[in-house]
Each structure stands twice: as C-alpha cells, then as structure tokens.
Length: 444
Image (cartoon, rainbow, N blue to C red; front, side):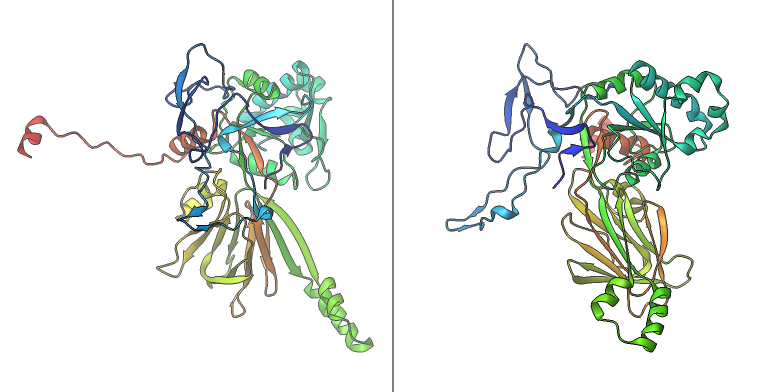
C-alpha cells in the first residue's frame, strides 16, 4: 500500500542484520546480537543501526504488526485464498532510511514571523550550504524578513538559495529531504507541498507544542550528518486523500438559461460541465463544521457507499492516526499510534448521548454530504487550511493515500510517540498513591 520511494533519492530499507520474525510462525524469543532497544538509557541522539557485539544478548523480536493470523479454523474450515487481495507491509519496527544516491538538495521550512528562529535558520543553512555543499531550497517569503535581508554576513549564503512560492512553483521532484524548524505546523505545511511522494522529513522542536518534532536543535550538525549518511529510523505517517466535488452554480444557472432558449443538453455533458473537482493530501484531519451558522450541522456520512450515520452537532472530524492527538483528542477521541492503519471518525459536540468516536479500517472510502433537509451550509478545512463552504449537492470523498509522510525518528517509532505523549500532553500525570504503613498492613 505504501510506496517504497520517498522523493528522488530516499527509500525505505529493511535492516538485514536486525532479527524481526512473526511470533506465530517462529519462536517468540531468540538470541540476537543486536543491541537491546528496551531499558536503555535515554540519549538525545539518532537511533543507530543494530551494531554487532562480542557477546550474545537476549532480546524479544516481536513485530509491531502482531503475529500472522492462522487461517485454518478447526479440522475442516480455512480461509479462501485470493492472491489479488494479499498485501505485504513491512514491519514498522524495521523501517529505516537509506539513499539510492547521496542527497544533494534539501528544503528548509521555517516558521514565519518568529524572531527566535532566525539564528537557528542561519546556522542550519550555512552548515548545509557551506559544509555539506547542498542545494538549499527556501520559500521566498522567508527571505523577506528584514532581519535576513539586512544581514550582510548572511548574504553569500543567501545568494546560493533556490527559492519558490507556494501554489506557483512545483518542487516535488527536486527535493531529496526536508528539514523543519518550528512547531507541528511546519510539518503539516511540508506535507501540503507534496501531493505525491514526500521526501523524508526531519523536524526540529522550535515551536510551542512539538508533538511531531522530536529533535532538539543543540546538536543539529551531528544529527543532520547521520540523516545524510542514511542512519535513521522512519515512521510512515499515513495521509488522507481527499476529493471535493462542487457544483458551479452560477455557471449552471447561466447555461441552463441559454439551453431553455436554444435546445437541450445531454445529461452526461451536464454532469461534466457543472462539477469542480479539487484534491488534497491531508496529514492530520479533515474537519466539517457548521461555520458561522447558529444551527446544528446536519451531514450524512457514507462508508463504501452505505449511509452509516447522520451527524447532528457542531460537525465531524475525519483524522489519521497522526491527527488523533490533535483536534480529535480535544473532541474526546482515542489516541492511536501512527503505525496503526486506520481512519478515525469523531463527532464535534454531537446532540446525542450515544455518539461515540469510532475507528474504521484504513482502506475504506468515506463520503460526507449535506443532508437533504439540512437548514444551513457546512464548512470544511484540511489540516486547518483551504477552508471553504460546502453546499447541497457537494461531496467530500476521503480515503487513505498511498503516499505517506516519512518522518525521521529521534529514537524509534514507539519510543518517540510515548515520549511526546508524556512531554507534550502530560499523558496520565497523577500524584502517586502512598504505600500502606506497616501497622496498616497488619490490620488487614
């Protein structure tokens, strides 16, 4: 389902030296000469490749996918074999970055209007351009900052930049990897620039929350060098492929008025001329809400062509596992690890006591439309951007994209996620309960 290539130079790699076996087909435990990943001291450095050691070390080798299910049931029943439906997905624990060719170009995304990021931005660009001789791409509006424009010492480096403008220049086939400086919004913005294959993304925590940005900037030289050398673990963050179909109402009225005078248009031509189709790649969530209206939103949700429910409330959130820790978490949804293939449907303030968030398989296709008896229009946004009105007859189709965002891990996919839960969201923070005193235990 997920393509192997990430941009023009990067690809996913399974480390041959690491032992990853299905616990249903092989032993749950085995002797391995790879260094233990559990119980190690926390170090703020990139996850290194399994290293050889002189003494054997006992280690569990379970796959993050879980065991392969047994497909024989009792003495006579078994699963009907259909080779066309078999999909092999690499174990997320073994996903590592490698390069087909040495990376030469890098896109640096900086949070706009943040003076604290100016010096890190200059230091990083100087290191990439002067030390590593890389082609640095920067958005034009970033260089319009007076602090950069008026810095004469940064001039020689700035002259080497390749610049682009969003919605005007296509850089999707020119970038080998991406470095983000800022908060989670910089990662969402990077995703929006690539409608197809996304280069590997390295995100530095220089914003406010930083759930998706695992790297600290203090040792950026050594960390960037390890990525350039292909020494890093990856987590593939699934994205949503969204198609919005809207009617050209003004054009439709004008054409219909002309047809009434001159003749009749065929139904197929009418359907083609009156529709406007827009497509988006979404990393966090698609939000459909009631907008400025004081009425409840009233939207129908279809799953693979079947109406499953009508949302009556402030709206509905359709999110990826990555987006489950964003708006969906604030609306009461569960938090899902990004390696879990799923789509979440979360109502926003539903006028119902029984409408709970649900998780559906990643391969389904969702469709959201205004209910025929809806009193008002709805509004939709994609990762908080491109907000637009949805009217009667418009539709929003959502499914999992085959182009994930390959996010470079600081340690590994599991450790990074729980680290972010603890540091950013203070997950399960509570004062510890005291032990019983000795005399209290004797009473029981």
